[in-house]
Length: 509
Image 1 (cartoon, helix red, strand yellow):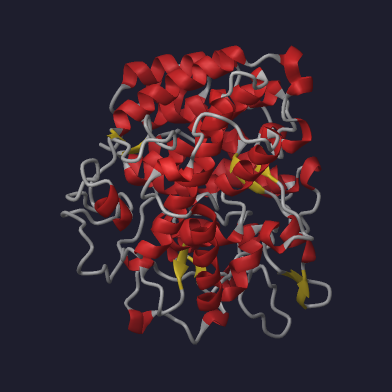
Image 2 (cartoon, one colour):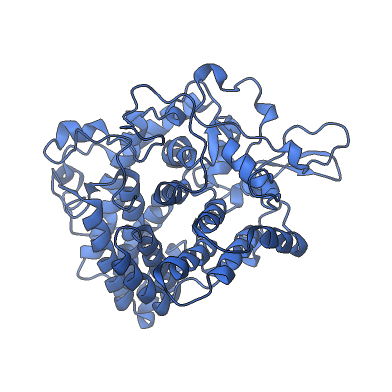
């Protein structure tokens, strides 16, 4: 099933993005918006640029960053990325699509002198969101000269990209005009429906995220950026979360995890199992039955008994991957699943609502943990413990909040939430904040992987069978993806042929 689908995905990406051999050919008018209204172009960039399509989600998140975040583990013997093997076709397909399409479209909107001011600022903010993910995946990347008609764009350092993104975001925030919303993207903005207030909170939250990312290497800039972002206004509730909706009537636009979950390419990781079943934290996480499905239930067992949730270790050798015993390991649960367990009927039932569930690309829970860390490490005003506890509560409730009632799985009770918070609270430190943030970020592998690389928490399990050709440079865990080989051939003066998978990000320490 998956082999056939991945071929279709790659062919679609080639058709969509063409080749990065010449940005001039891809973009004959690189600074002029086409005749198509920019709001329709922006809709596509929001969705595909946020990985809401199952094809690109599969190639980048499912097969790479979600495995490197140790959210889930590979369960096929023909996909080697969990062992740090790079597949150039997968990487190149997504890289080409973003540079030839999504960044190009946003640059066109931003450069159009006749464009609505709010459309321009929203495009700048979303471009910053996408580039932050991109640089945190590769490090140095084409940025300042990317997708503007330059055939061989230079690679900017991650440090310079972060510095520029902070300036860009602060300027975009200052130019958002609530009086001009009528000419904005409106309903074509599938995340915030053109609300300048919510885009401002999203942008400030992104600034806070970036400030925390750089807090170990540039604490003064981090402190200044975090303080200004919080004062200007970050997300204040789950209703402010950046969420991409799903369309149950369009297979290309359904929740991507719902689409790929039953292709049997992954199961819950062993790391997730031990952090959610009480082994590591001494308390069962109420989100366990939301994130993951119980394994086959026999007789009259409680399906949600903790013993019915099993994970697979990341990076197993081909001979050890449990391809023939997948029923013994937990697939994704009702946050995106095709099935849920009906305790009354004692069997699994179709969960059609799973394909309607939205994708969280930036949650309020994350903002709470970012603020808690800003208080603890940067001296920003606030109470780190209360922010930490609010982050846990927000994560528990975000899937069933009023604005996302399509969720049909189990919801933690107030007693369960209170008991869990009491068990994992106490004296707050870096490990506690990062561990709970990592759990709350699921299934956002981009940020989950970043948190581990940045802090060393939670305690990941070293993979037992790394590819002998993986250039880890003495590191135990992978720190970046390989550049697509097309860059080596077509942009040799900028491409770093010596880059290794173990090379640390600028913000790592």
